[in-house]
Length: 115
Image (cartoon, rainbow, N blue to C red):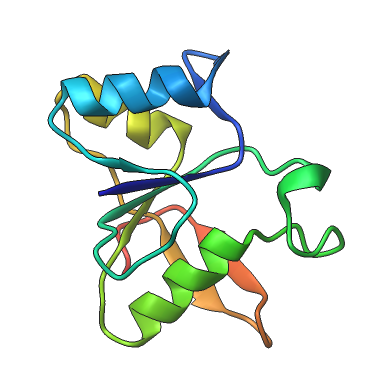
């Protein structure tokens, strides 16, 4: 189950959410629209614009905070960036980004294969 946050780009081009959903379904994935739940396995972390962030100062989304909380509780959800989702859609593995809570609901994301 794939949850998206922010605007996603593949090969530098913005891809509309409906088109991304169709691409995920074509690879036997199940995109989720809106509702976050513990069955999510991948969060696609796209570009976070001011209208889609919980906190414009710290530039974080509710979906990212939710996934970080799930990870902290032992439910591993892989966070991928635009390059990662592009790789998955081509049938290649993607690197899972590391994340950690910094203070409160502030989440830091970094390259790597962390949990």
